[in-house]
Image (cartoon, rainbow, N blue to C red):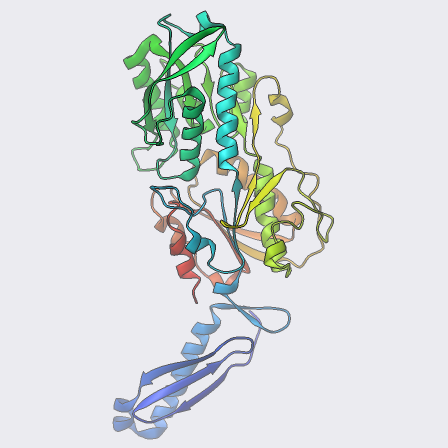
Length: 445
């Protein structure tokens, strides 16, 4: 931290008053009781004590700021803040947490268009059903397409949207993404109309309390295979990790179509091997690059109203532009990328992990970013998102400090969200989507 001047004035009386001013900041006043000291030690000692108190308070204040080139100090509360992957929202209703999203004018969310993604996965499943041979699909010939559903996190708006998309496509949507509520649907296959039943939907929560848990999916699939037998004609999951977890069950019914979401490397390999039927790419490279580009823009002084377009929908000052399509929702301050369905027909073009050639080395000043990851064991984040961040960060002259949680307790991330004055901006991925205020609360000072 660079050196700066602090002006402190102290007067004695029944109470001491500390006036503190740091160039480029507000004028602050702190009050402390010095009467007992004055009675016992006199004015000289009081002045020394007051000066010491002033130094301590000044040091504490300065720890909340970072110096800009022009000599002004930037408070943590005024620094860029981007939430990513897990959108601040109510964990029950899924309603966006606008209080958090309006924390300051430099607060944004970068993620995937969940409604678009849910529609893409739903259509992917329907397209497969309509092209299948009815006799092969309906394993027990009862005229019913029975499916089981792996739900990632009942409190996560992305998981809710994917569950809704699946059920709407199959006609089983009954107005809620709750695991136990689905109505009977129908689908036309080969000129015949089949009834569709959700045999069981279940949230994949591990024994340790973590959500989106692949081991829980393996256990659930084993139980379902025993319980429902050849009534299972389809397995659908909110993520690739859960779909792959189902495939790990020792009694998984061979040949049953399985659908995931994320386009993880192991899922793409499983598609090539004929084990996984399909998945959805949420353009992880576009998301990771956009998260960093928005921060870069704000740190470079790009006006907030243009931060989600520079280098994203149009070329920026360095010649960068992400190739993927994005939409921006002004009300929720959300920058969202589109999704793509993947099957055996097109999976090979995604196999190597597509890096966006539209992002080049920039000549910007290096800046420091503190980035949280809700769960160190999350397959999508650890296997795809973080590697993409590490690829693009040096190109954009951003130095990342990544801290990771356990996927269960917010404290596992919050307790590592420290030394905030040492960073120029923040990227947050929460354990619980309703925890946005826990992070902004630490940025108040």
